[in-house]
Image (cartoon, rainbow over all chains, first blue to last red; front, side):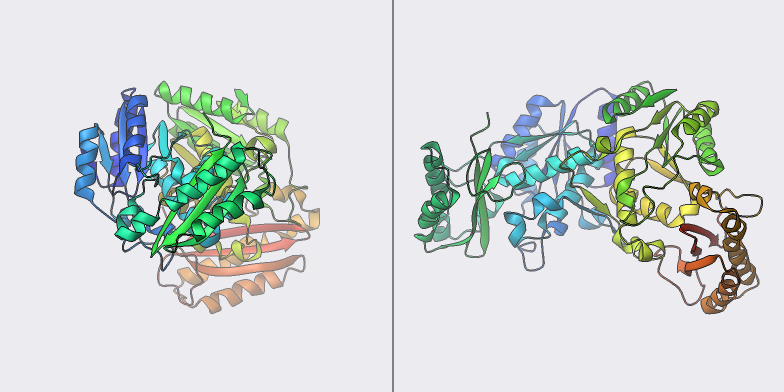
Length: 283
Length: 283
């Protein structure tokens, strides 16, 4: 397995593979890999000849006061996992390699970024767009893989890829969960034991919403009030949002008449967790 | 010569050439081609196996009230010129092919875009960045060619290409001029005969500045006052700006101690023209 730390070496390696006629898959991550990342890597391994995992805690997607400094890291464990899985190369750049002095470029998908997580993190998705566009340009993958826990991120990146005429095909993979329903996230490692015990409330609230939708309920405020009651009954959870959004525009909907994204975000202590489902479920 | 009007056909053609091992050059234009464009095309023809000229009057780089509707067009003449020169393909998309419904992506290089033309055209360069990034992704050229009449544009696009880790090499070509010194521009066609006779005043003002710099003058306000006097003596010219800017940051300089861009913009009737030189001259 190659460990590539410079843009030039990553470009050279991926172009060499492409010239050999090999297909390249990219799994962009911020490291501290878990079973969700592993599922993306495994999908890439089945679909592409060579899989590249990027590990980069991207500073431009954190606002001042967010958890950039405390974001969990374990590059040695990540490397071992990638090697065991059969990853061909890790791209692991330092910050100045990605954002050298004088860096100025900005990228955004403002419409989709204004809703849901964009309300409390107004600069987050521009940072995500920027780093993913750079990673796609550096690794030049045929396919890139993203987890649906970050559904809004995937919708935004898909819009970006279409709007900018990128060649890479972006693929979304299902959320992977703990046995108690908590969506896997690197940030779960930062929960105290009581917070960890409380965190599955997000999934329970979403389950309640899904049951109502499956039963024919279509009024968002009815669905939201039942789901919110579940979260409010958990004293360790501090709600950021619970929203039923049009799956195309991500704008909130009053009445569920088309595909929707039902999404929730809440703080457990200083740790912000998110979860969601798409209704009706995609195959 | 191929005439490609869809993104898909342009992508397919350029990828086919690349797979054959042929190098591809792109000359992005808004059409109404003149000798400046021809010099870019000729440069591409000497350096690349296949040259693509894009012709697209990009709406996102015009602000409301600017000259989008009256921008001169002559696609038949352009096609003939390209064919005569030996261009392999023209990419000539309609607006909805480039900006389909739901389009949202934004791209910018805010630092370099705030100065010079960015002062009077604050949204212009974001539109240029957007369309050129799309064209580079669509045509995937090895090299792309730009004229130095739009020096700020070239500096911004070079920064964009570096920051976003694009593969294409961006090349700047010298300004091409009429015998009386007027820089070639598609907009020259919109000058009335008296305005056309007045327009070379821009070049004369720049010549005055260059003579002072070559003579050792280093104070921007001294240089500017002599140059401005020349423009103000021309009643048909309405100054937008005359500026001596640091060639790296494009910020105005008081004292010329490093490479500078000396740039001027003025209206002649409703037509805005620009011109510039770099000092000391690059080879």
